[in-house]
Length: 413
Image (tube, rainbow, N blue to C red):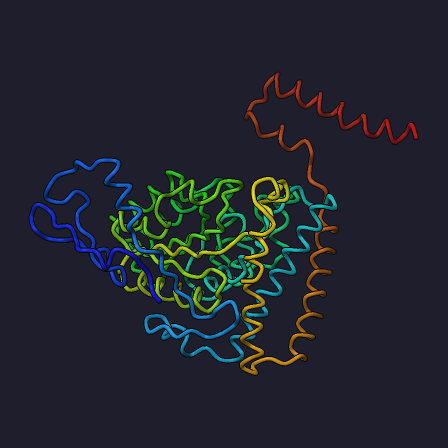
């Protein structure tokens, strides 16, 4: 069970008669046009796409909690202990509990918005635990599990969603960059940072997180180009949760996302994103490649967003309940629990203690958010123009009158 794709195909030779390579574990691919030139009909292209082999998935743990042997990736989790396994389970449980509390707080009016990671815990915890302390992480706005792995206090993630700060933590204290709302731009930041540490001769790597929707952004394509050309020590970790808000992946790409790496000249791997062991192993491999000077890797964690895109989204408008039910059977936390129980690596005492810790975390998060100040409703008007503007002054006055109307209404009662 490995990755892809075109290794079984005959490499197309260039005019010079030599086939190019995309790096380890992906086989050879030829030059894009071959000796016969660039003419290809739409019918031929579509026919070739239909004959492509099915995407292969790196999986070490089945949904039923059974361990699967993998000659290529087992070595990266060979030293894992029962304590480590319980630690991964604890990470996922506590991350999910924090996420559920944040969602509830938004519904109660304490947060303006929240982007849930429900269902993506294994992808984030597995990859997050694969990083070293000196590696640098560039997240989007959903990497709450990775933040947990990097030692960022969960309560610090909530200030931006409450509107009281622009981030809430010092990126340099944990090598974990601030959340990025602009879709895909963090991949360029990561690539530039990786090129910089390569010039510095640092023995570290960079990992950039993004979703399947961001893979359609030009920023991501540009970051792929620069990282490949400059052999940057960066891992692109795509959490393909299959829905870019309401747009399914098949409407964004004709081929599986990990295969896109071939066109840029570096390896791509698809991993079971609900398998924490596989995510850990594959990310370790990719980061090791980066540190050894072998350049970038694209990891596609094939997972599922069991909740809404954000709390302003209604997923029932574009997908059916049966789809979610099918993926709930592949739940990453339940999967690892089954393995722990079957292997006698955890008993009821462990699960009960973790449940108590989980509730304590929820209470701490709830109290911390409610202790935060209310956001300054007028701050948005202060930084629109350096020297002020008549239109902004007019809008500020209108907004002030609108806010005052609530006080008048309350006083009238």
